[in-house]
Image 1 (tube, rainbow, N blue to C red):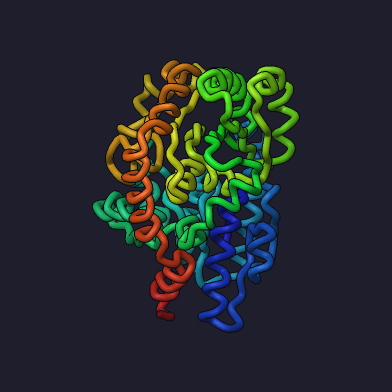
Image 2: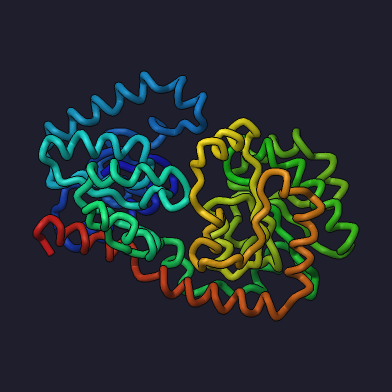
Length: 376
């Protein structure tokens, strides 16, 4: 089993437990995080061996990553497992899967790359690399079938975790929100580059919101505690003047308690949707990256946020690049706060998708894998 980052570790651990329940004595090893190790996967390598982000950082680490993949491949072939199961991290894992499949191993990948959003040309190469693909979303298998790849929708672990929503009022009390007080949360993203591009923008939006709602509680939700220093260095004074509280490692609590979120595009927009939190989605890429993506027509989707992609409609506002202005984000948030009927419809749709995606992803994935291996 081969994960590549913390989210993959969580998905893989869920799968490893399900496989262990079905096959007593099963042996699992590979590139694993702490959750996978706790679920019975022997860690040949830790997650930190792949923990690089961004084009320049990847290039700097490329010789080491290529050596790692070569050594890892040799170790797998020497062990001769029944299957190689990779989880997300497609740039590293799918190349390895392709090499192993050529040597006769059954290769399975869990979490489809976002081929429906950009770089759709990858589909043919992915199909040549795998015997089975397990997807998080119901529309994904159809993308691969014309290319001869068996793909199975298994559901999403986030929806499994959120089958029963926590009671909202105690969460609001936990954050110090008074009865009837609006709670607006700001999410700059989970990566350093995102925070660099978004912290000042959100501080400006917060100032505008404060002028409109003097009694509102404004909270910036940070993915990690060590992001706080970066945010303060970039926009500390402006955030303090707007009365914004910084909260780390409490994203789900903040989203479940909030009246509206202004969120950088990413998996967190799905989490916000599944807990029923109305949201405004925004994103700013480095100008050169955005220009290149447009020039090469790499982006193939009408929407960028997962709630809109899943529902096939403009359910939540999306503001990208220059359209992601502080004024516009503020206006979009106000629109949610002043339209309770729209919020009610949104929450009903969120409940329906929570049920559709929450189908026991780990168990579904384990059954599909064992069936593929002739142990179903």
